[in-house]
Image (tube, rainbow, N blue to C red; front, side):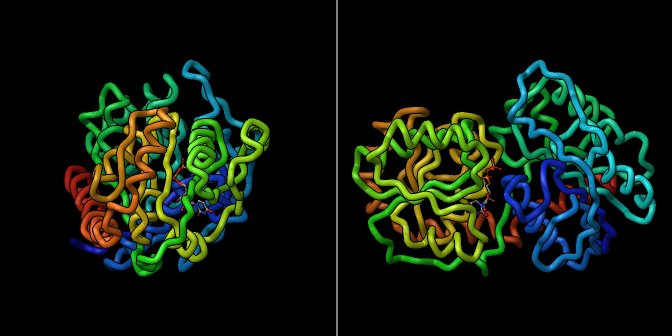
Length: 357
Ligand code: UDP
């Protein structure tokens, strides 16, 4: 494959490194690493205040977008004045002819709409399942006019869109050198994610209360009211909130846990945290819903539980010690390494660029 010049445009909901962008932040870093390792030349454009290891960022000021998960299905597209989304894409438009390809990480209407106006192709990596009609309509329009330019992270995510069969599934990948395998866990569980209603933290807290096994909670405090409600409802649950940790500390903490609980209410597109936990040798108990259920191998690298069923979580916790922690690490080495991810991303790029030529 030739070395390409690539312009990566980051999420518009917050600066990289703050956690506001959720899993997209780690995805951008890993995709950039995978492509850089293969000799491609990259520039990353992201909101002002962004920080990311290894790569220089072209920082753009402006007001953040409201995350799509906080919108109703029929809500119209809105943008704040002095929008960072508009400002980033204004910059991208000015420089795009110096690049072979622009890669879009924003789950936003504007970059999709702009696709036909750019002279270089835009590859869109869609990081969420179907949420609003306006977004679905615009993604569908791009898929129709520019086949192969839209990718997603899991088959389950693709299936939430009526045109899912036309989307390219590239899964995700991790820099495994940053995750240490650990086979000596303490008797604790972990829950990791943004503290927000769509993540269903209350079910994990209830499971901790029933089993009496301490639950460590990691992630950005996005909805303080939601957190307070959980604390009031389960005042004596053995839980501890430890904040949003950088990867180096998060992986150390995950390795010390017997298992990670994933309890999403929505259809999680992928669930980076699942592969991060497995990389440390920590099995994952997840609802049979969304991307995490596609990753975890029931009975081998964790357990799949009937969605929204706390008793199911409790039963699975009782079987955690039957999981071989080496099998967890091994699964990520085989399927979600930077090499495996880089192969999938390069194939996608090659397909869409060769179609262009
Ligand atoms: N994360 C982190 N530190 C923490 C908790 C979470 O860096 O203390 C990161 C984690 O690595 C993952 C992201 O937050 O990449 C959460 O992404 P996920 O795909 O699980 O969910 P999303 O927030 O995108 O819905």
